Image (cartoon, rainbow, N blue to C red):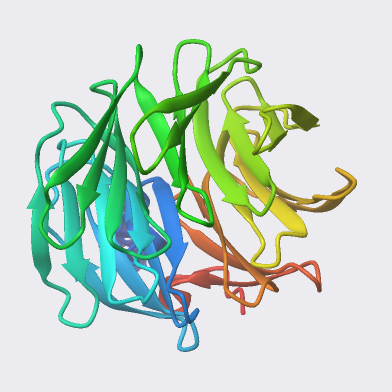
Length: 328
């Protein structure tokens, strides 16, 4: 009898050990590593994610499953962005490179390596002919997508954490550290148009939509600006650093992800809080799916969650087959 109980005890201990180290039940999402960036393809069929694990993963949204893992970066992947036609994916990493991937073949087609420090953000121009990359080397480089030629070097006085093109492609916004100035640039000439210095902490994210520019900062605020004048429209609060922001496709809602373990959705016209989605870990990434009813979030627990914004409910966690909580 004692021998039987000893065997049971050893079996239970073995299962616990294997589960704890991820050998018996592999951790979901990115193997338990923080998810830093998310982007939906223009048709909404694919979701790309980047993580501290150095990998980019492509997910089939309808099937709720991973379809590819893109490897090659030598350090954290901080940013991913699809081209407007969905054929290419750009990624920025702490290894100092921007990689451009063919979405269909899953192969790297170009590597841009002119940065000398972490690349924290990448963005395609609306016509897909240019890619902007923001780096801790205190520059934003604007590249020709087809050739890798540097069109403009936008110099800053501190590390650059965020970058975005305006919807018409005429302006570029960049967000920086050390007090968080936001710079607005002429995308055609590379000339500095305006500097906005209202944030009291580094700016981690910027995005455009119509007449608005939005920024998210370490100071715990989401700020909405008039993109033409640079005047602040309103400030929206989080209880921790804001790591990512995203407008809904129609521009009426604004999503923000924070280290306060929440993703929040705001009504742009009024600043009212529309939804708040709680997480068990700090949230580092957020993306709206085309159509505007689904939101994706990525957190430090390595999980990617999909939410029905209108229904105010969590839909599932990617990948579903690895989710031990059975969220469906």
